[in-house]
Image (spheres, rainbow, N blue to C red):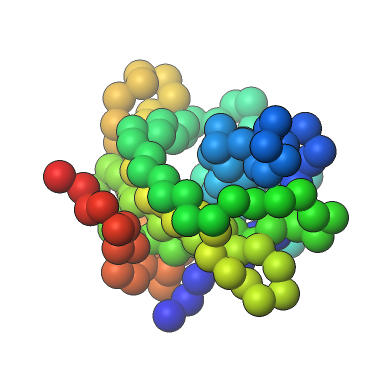
Length: 156
């Protein structure tokens, strides 16, 4: 089982009136981890994740569009100085889409506070139409494919 683990710092502004990370900010944390894992940044030379095969620069020929996200909030996340850890893997690698599974872990005990699935569609930047996942992308992502996360209330 090969999974990516991406540390993501919390911001004081992520908290809501109840003193825990707001549900909308949880989506931002998942997004930060996903971008770090799957998008190659021009300033990185060989230091990015092995899955970072999509160009994130202004002249990128590929975009990804979030088609669906399902989130289960299992425990509240209190503010802490240490980053939370987003554990990710690919639950399904399709022709033009991927399902990314997430587990948000907090603290030394690595308790799961959130689990989620996002479906991303790979899109040609010039036309806006979905495009097939390229062979080099598929080769980079296949080692991270495992079973789709089981949500307590499964998709219908």
